[in-house]
Length: 444
Figure (cartoon, rainbow, N blue to C red):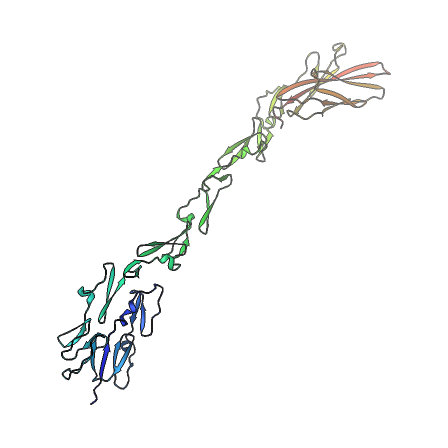
């Protein structure tokens, strides 16, 4: 029967795969794999991973960086690389358990990092659990076959024999916006208007309009921000979120025909007494005489003017005149009215205040025209300040012209006289038109 001997030398350099490495180094040599928790390369146990690693009944023996296929009756001697291997005839045949224990020959000593058990096997010594390691207090001890290694806490890296903080913010773009390094770790921050996603790295937009409702009126969300808008009649305040009423009345004096009243979010136009609003901003005269909103008696007639009304007697005739028709007073006889006009006609008219001048305002004309008659027109009374002028436009008619602007409210009575002279009959007569002009208080 053949006898095979295997001398396995556990070199310290084999364990040096856990030596100080760059934190970004994640590739290991063949037979090792990267352990992200230990942040180093660890041995791959091929005997466990590969079910048929050895053929022809050979036995699989794992070791650092590879494995061996040996006969079932192989004897195994282990040393620490400094002592020569010794074989003894008294060494019993071993039954090696892969990656867990090694058999010791007879009275030979186990390699460093191993100790003999009651079955004469060399068992690994767990220096970490037994306190036989030299790791610093800020390091973690990891046991390995025949030895151990000292690793830094997560978030730290080896610098010589010391563990120093690893600045994750400098190594890679962990965070979407801002990375804040801390002792042994880091955290992410987002710009204003964003918040951390569930992965604590990405940043997602914050819908401020739903979360905090910052705007007084209308809120529109934007990526990383928001914008406020105000309802009609308001404008944004200096803080860009509150709304301030717009004083539309201050824009122009022509917002309303009479008076502008500002209100929250709008404005309204008002009119003086005697007027009503027309088309939101104009003032329209109220005809109190038509609406029966007046105090005139039965023997009086109601005369409406711009902004009000007045009551005048239905029969304005005074002695010696008598009423012959509506608004007309006639003399009953020539003897009774000697030196007086034969008739007086009463007329009324309205006028806006501050009417532009010159303006034709009233026409007077003879009702009976004779070819042999000559007609003369004049302002007999009521023109003391020269506000009027009588312009003749035909042989039988004249136009009253306003030459000075009048301010209301006021009432003026102007007597317009027409003198008729018959050359053939040697007959002369006169008639009077008494015009009452009522000037309203406003230019509308």
